[in-house]
Length: 405
Picture 1: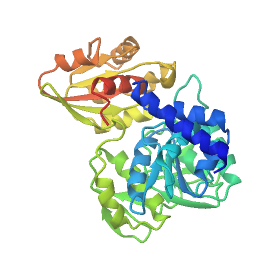
Picture 2: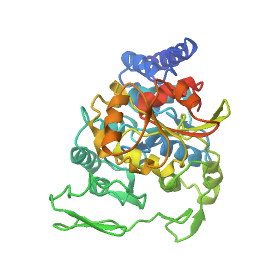
Picture 3: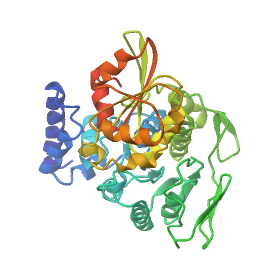
């Protein structure tokens, strides 16, 4: 690398290390920010010579990135922004920290995909899903799909895309090379209208099509069946994960599809996927004072739908904040159907617990307000406790549990 890039890389590592030592954070943002101030081209310099994968979407980015990194590790060392810092500062910090690895798998914020694609020139881009998120500042879903479509139309890159999401399908069709994965889409409220012509989307079972133009569900090459996946040759592979829910089998199928483009055999990747227990605290099981606590992250309506699918019928703590990383608008709570919680004990906490209280009352869900996570844990008897929280509330609870990973 040029001297300026070397100095910037050194500064990135030093700032990140100092942040960790002083307890200010993991350094994945501040390190990259300082490095890019010294050399604005640092991300491109660090990406040069590596085989790079970018993974983007509204939900599941961090988990799919972790699973893809595990699958790719069959080939050698893989750099990754494993803690979820998914903007250029985080990518820069992750690559600087990793050193000269041959591969990198980078979770990428959907807004930043064009910028990061330009800087890193990836070999594969995986597109998971698009749904409403951070209503006070994020693009409307169809606008995000249009941004992706415009970006991919001018790039020579292999795309791995979710065939079950009409918005993702429309965006990915602009790419020259696409591998389709039947990753599923349980949340339909952002894809009833065709992004191409505005006509209604019709669904019959797993198949969807636009009623006014040619847009339709592509034939997937990777599908989920029972407890496993079927690869493009038609071979079934049982997928044994420690992560819960169908959505994580879908994330695993995407990871396998990505790794296959680098020559990784499914049989070789599966044992690596089975080793993943939690992802930056997500799905972590922690024992405290006779209570087995599981942490689930849910940041938007589609995420809450999947969290309810994963959560066991046990006492459940819901925690909501509305700080800057969460988005300041909590009206999205009215897009969430909380009825799956009926019949279980529900506790609520967080900065915006009263917003959640009103929503649960409307949904007819009894609840108890507790001021803190610690008091919630003390309020339930020994045994299981599920915790579902949005981003900063999740991080607060994770910090109380000693930054469990």
